[in-house]
Image (cartoon, rainbow, N blue to C red; front, side):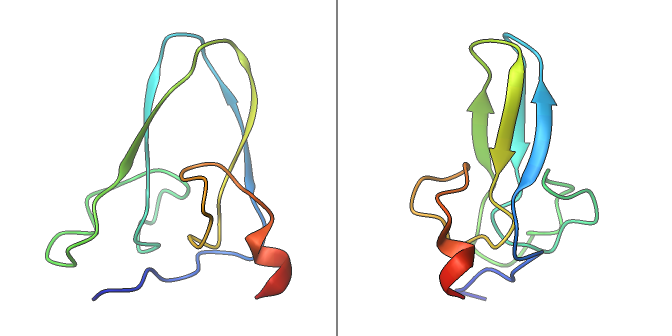
Length: 79
């Protein structure tokens, strides 16, 4: 597998906690979207670490095509 699977054509809004690290699913196969559940094993695609600097709502990419991984850059609007 070289290309990720689109999990959904909109971002996932997540309230993150300051100082906490999150693993964003980059392959699109996780059942725990937008986070990794190790479904990427054998795909050659690895999750992306995101460390929250402050408590806020973050928009994680759902289409997996963003250029600003792991955050949404509105690429889903052109899919």
